[in-house]
Length: 232
Image (tube, rainbow, N blue to C red; front, top):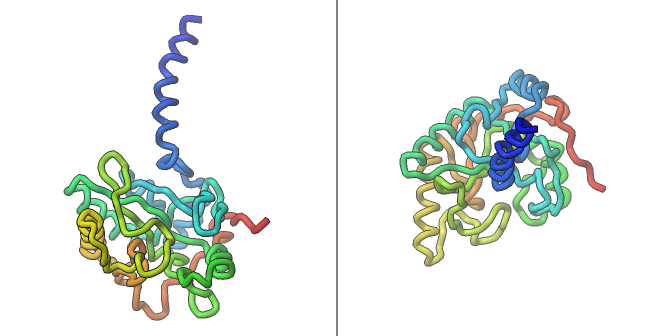
Protein backbone atom coordinates (compact mmCIF):
# COMPACT_ATOMS: atom_id res chain seq x y z
CA UNK A 1 0.00 0.00 0.00
CA UNK A 2 2.79 2.40 0.92
CA UNK A 3 4.58 1.61 -2.35
CA UNK A 4 1.40 2.22 -4.37
CA UNK A 5 0.83 5.55 -2.64
CA UNK A 6 4.46 6.59 -3.25
CA UNK A 7 4.15 5.61 -6.92
CA UNK A 8 0.99 7.69 -7.34
CA UNK A 9 2.67 10.73 -5.76
CA UNK A 10 5.68 10.34 -8.03
CA UNK A 11 3.62 9.97 -11.19
CA UNK A 12 1.17 12.84 -10.66
CA UNK A 13 3.69 15.66 -11.28
CA UNK A 14 4.75 13.97 -14.49
CA UNK A 15 1.16 13.74 -15.65
CA UNK A 16 0.68 17.41 -14.98
CA UNK A 17 3.83 18.35 -16.88
CA UNK A 18 2.91 16.14 -19.80
CA UNK A 19 -0.58 17.59 -19.97
CA UNK A 20 0.93 21.03 -20.40
CA UNK A 21 2.93 19.88 -23.43
CA UNK A 22 0.20 18.36 -25.58
CA UNK A 23 1.35 20.19 -28.69
CA UNK A 24 4.94 19.03 -28.42
CA UNK A 25 3.98 15.46 -27.57
CA UNK A 26 1.44 15.04 -30.37
CA UNK A 27 2.46 11.99 -32.47
CA UNK A 28 5.81 12.13 -30.69
CA UNK A 29 6.98 8.75 -31.93
CA UNK A 30 7.34 7.46 -35.45
CA UNK A 31 5.86 3.95 -35.82
CA UNK A 32 8.85 1.63 -36.22
CA UNK A 33 7.70 0.16 -39.53
CA UNK A 34 7.01 3.62 -40.95
CA UNK A 35 10.47 4.76 -39.86
CA UNK A 36 12.11 1.83 -41.63
CA UNK A 37 10.09 2.27 -44.81
CA UNK A 38 10.68 6.02 -44.79
CA UNK A 39 14.43 5.57 -44.34
CA UNK A 40 14.49 3.22 -47.32
CA UNK A 41 13.08 6.09 -49.37
CA UNK A 42 15.56 8.67 -48.11
CA UNK A 43 13.34 10.27 -45.47
CA UNK A 44 14.56 10.98 -41.94
CA UNK A 45 12.60 11.12 -38.68
CA UNK A 46 13.09 14.78 -37.76
CA UNK A 47 12.13 14.32 -34.11
CA UNK A 48 14.94 11.82 -33.65
CA UNK A 49 17.41 13.71 -35.85
CA UNK A 50 16.84 17.11 -34.18
CA UNK A 51 15.65 16.21 -30.65
CA UNK A 52 15.27 19.83 -29.47
CA UNK A 53 13.07 20.95 -32.35
CA UNK A 54 9.37 21.59 -31.70
CA UNK A 55 6.81 19.84 -33.90
CA UNK A 56 3.15 20.73 -34.28
CA UNK A 57 1.90 19.23 -37.55
CA UNK A 58 -1.13 21.37 -38.34
CA UNK A 59 -2.71 18.82 -40.69
CA UNK A 60 -2.75 16.24 -37.89
CA UNK A 61 -5.30 18.47 -36.13
CA UNK A 62 -8.59 20.08 -37.07
CA UNK A 63 -7.04 23.54 -36.60
CA UNK A 64 -6.03 24.00 -40.21
CA UNK A 65 -7.44 25.47 -43.41
CA UNK A 66 -9.36 22.25 -44.18
CA UNK A 67 -11.09 22.29 -40.78
CA UNK A 68 -10.37 18.62 -40.06
CA UNK A 69 -7.43 16.31 -39.47
CA UNK A 70 -5.92 15.11 -42.74
CA UNK A 71 -2.98 13.25 -41.19
CA UNK A 72 -3.33 10.31 -38.81
CA UNK A 73 -2.73 11.08 -35.13
CA UNK A 74 0.58 9.18 -35.21
CA UNK A 75 1.86 11.06 -38.27
CA UNK A 76 5.66 11.13 -38.33
CA UNK A 77 7.58 14.31 -39.07
CA UNK A 78 9.81 13.38 -42.01
CA UNK A 79 12.19 15.18 -44.34
CA UNK A 80 14.67 14.12 -46.98
CA UNK A 81 17.88 13.45 -45.06
CA UNK A 82 19.89 16.21 -46.77
CA UNK A 83 17.06 18.66 -46.05
CA UNK A 84 16.93 17.59 -42.39
CA UNK A 85 20.67 18.32 -42.14
CA UNK A 86 20.02 21.90 -43.27
CA UNK A 87 17.15 22.28 -40.82
CA UNK A 88 19.39 21.10 -38.00
CA UNK A 89 21.86 23.85 -38.93
CA UNK A 90 19.09 26.47 -38.89
CA UNK A 91 17.99 25.26 -35.46
CA UNK A 92 21.56 25.53 -34.17
CA UNK A 93 21.89 29.07 -35.51
CA UNK A 94 18.69 30.13 -33.74
CA UNK A 95 19.65 28.39 -30.50
CA UNK A 96 22.60 30.76 -30.27
CA UNK A 97 20.03 33.55 -30.10
CA UNK A 98 17.92 31.69 -27.48
CA UNK A 99 15.31 30.92 -30.11
CA UNK A 100 14.22 27.85 -32.07
CA UNK A 101 11.96 26.39 -34.72
CA UNK A 102 8.51 24.86 -34.61
CA UNK A 103 7.57 22.72 -37.60
CA UNK A 104 4.03 23.15 -38.91
CA UNK A 105 4.50 20.80 -41.87
CA UNK A 106 7.29 18.75 -43.40
CA UNK A 107 6.88 15.75 -45.72
CA UNK A 108 3.31 15.85 -46.97
CA UNK A 109 1.87 12.66 -48.46
CA UNK A 110 0.80 13.31 -52.07
CA UNK A 111 -2.61 11.91 -51.14
CA UNK A 112 -3.07 14.93 -48.86
CA UNK A 113 -1.81 17.33 -51.51
CA UNK A 114 -4.60 16.08 -53.78
CA UNK A 115 -7.19 16.68 -51.05
CA UNK A 116 -5.90 20.19 -50.34
CA UNK A 117 -5.74 21.14 -54.01
CA UNK A 118 -9.27 19.87 -54.60
CA UNK A 119 -10.79 21.61 -51.59
CA UNK A 120 -8.60 24.69 -51.06
CA UNK A 121 -6.98 25.20 -54.45
CA UNK A 122 -8.84 28.45 -55.02
CA UNK A 123 -6.84 30.02 -52.19
CA UNK A 124 -3.68 29.81 -54.27
CA UNK A 125 -1.85 28.12 -51.41
CA UNK A 126 -1.73 24.61 -52.82
CA UNK A 127 -0.05 23.49 -56.02
CA UNK A 128 -2.30 21.42 -58.28
CA UNK A 129 -0.74 17.95 -58.74
CA UNK A 130 -1.90 18.09 -62.37
CA UNK A 131 0.85 20.63 -62.99
CA UNK A 132 3.45 19.53 -60.44
CA UNK A 133 3.79 18.08 -56.96
CA UNK A 134 4.53 20.32 -54.00
CA UNK A 135 8.09 19.94 -52.75
CA UNK A 136 6.52 18.94 -49.44
CA UNK A 137 5.62 15.65 -51.16
CA UNK A 138 9.28 14.78 -51.62
CA UNK A 139 10.29 15.93 -48.13
CA UNK A 140 12.36 18.84 -49.48
CA UNK A 141 10.19 21.68 -48.12
CA UNK A 142 9.22 22.63 -44.60
CA UNK A 143 6.77 25.06 -42.97
CA UNK A 144 8.21 26.59 -39.80
CA UNK A 145 7.78 29.43 -37.36
CA UNK A 146 9.89 30.96 -34.61
CA UNK A 147 9.63 30.11 -30.90
CA UNK A 148 11.48 31.23 -27.77
CA UNK A 149 13.23 28.93 -25.28
CA UNK A 150 9.93 28.35 -23.46
CA UNK A 151 8.27 27.15 -26.66
CA UNK A 152 6.15 30.27 -27.14
CA UNK A 153 5.51 31.20 -30.76
CA UNK A 154 6.82 34.63 -31.65
CA UNK A 155 4.77 37.28 -33.42
CA UNK A 156 4.73 36.84 -37.19
CA UNK A 157 2.77 38.50 -40.03
CA UNK A 158 0.13 35.72 -40.09
CA UNK A 159 -0.55 32.24 -38.85
CA UNK A 160 -0.08 29.09 -40.96
CA UNK A 161 -1.88 28.92 -44.32
CA UNK A 162 -3.24 32.45 -44.15
CA UNK A 163 -2.99 33.59 -47.73
CA UNK A 164 -3.01 37.04 -49.23
CA UNK A 165 -0.67 39.98 -49.26
CA UNK A 166 0.08 39.76 -45.52
CA UNK A 167 1.61 36.30 -46.02
CA UNK A 168 4.30 37.54 -48.42
CA UNK A 169 7.87 37.14 -47.21
CA UNK A 170 8.50 40.90 -47.41
CA UNK A 171 6.60 42.19 -44.39
CA UNK A 172 5.24 45.70 -45.03
CA UNK A 173 3.65 46.36 -41.65
CA UNK A 174 4.77 48.75 -38.92
CA UNK A 175 5.30 46.17 -36.15
CA UNK A 176 9.04 46.21 -35.43
CA UNK A 177 8.84 42.99 -33.44
CA UNK A 178 7.26 41.13 -36.34
CA UNK A 179 9.85 42.58 -38.69
CA UNK A 180 12.68 41.47 -36.40
CA UNK A 181 11.27 37.97 -35.87
CA UNK A 182 10.74 37.42 -39.56
CA UNK A 183 14.26 38.61 -40.35
CA UNK A 184 15.77 36.26 -37.75
CA UNK A 185 13.86 33.31 -39.18
CA UNK A 186 14.65 34.11 -42.79
CA UNK A 187 18.35 34.65 -42.17
CA UNK A 188 18.73 31.41 -40.22
CA UNK A 189 16.93 29.38 -42.87
CA UNK A 190 18.76 31.07 -45.74
CA UNK A 191 22.16 30.64 -44.07
CA UNK A 192 21.35 26.95 -43.53
CA UNK A 193 20.65 26.39 -47.24
CA UNK A 194 16.96 27.07 -47.79
CA UNK A 195 15.23 29.33 -50.30
CA UNK A 196 12.29 31.53 -49.28
CA UNK A 197 8.90 31.20 -50.96
CA UNK A 198 7.73 34.68 -51.97
CA UNK A 199 4.06 34.21 -51.12
CA UNK A 200 4.32 32.22 -47.85
CA UNK A 201 6.70 33.51 -45.19
CA UNK A 202 6.53 30.15 -43.33
CA UNK A 203 7.47 27.97 -46.32
CA UNK A 204 11.10 27.17 -47.12
CA UNK A 205 12.52 24.93 -49.87
CA UNK A 206 15.80 23.04 -49.82
CA UNK A 207 17.96 25.21 -52.09
CA UNK A 208 19.88 22.21 -53.45
CA UNK A 209 16.71 20.59 -54.75
CA UNK A 210 14.77 23.72 -55.74
CA UNK A 211 15.99 23.67 -59.34
CA UNK A 212 16.83 19.98 -59.45
CA UNK A 213 15.87 18.28 -62.71
CA UNK A 214 14.22 15.90 -62.54
CA UNK A 215 12.77 16.98 -59.18
CA UNK A 216 13.24 14.84 -56.09
CA UNK A 217 10.83 11.87 -56.21
CA UNK A 218 7.62 12.10 -54.24
CA UNK A 219 6.91 9.51 -51.55
CA UNK A 220 3.32 8.36 -51.18
CA UNK A 221 1.81 7.68 -47.78
CA UNK A 222 0.97 4.07 -48.53
CA UNK A 223 4.63 3.45 -49.38
CA UNK A 224 5.62 4.06 -45.76
CA UNK A 225 2.52 2.66 -44.08
CA UNK A 226 0.81 6.00 -43.51
CA UNK A 227 -2.95 5.90 -44.07
CA UNK A 228 -4.58 9.22 -44.86
CA UNK A 229 -7.91 10.26 -43.38
CA UNK A 230 -10.40 10.16 -46.23
CA UNK A 231 -13.18 12.79 -46.43
CA UNK A 232 -16.34 11.89 -44.54
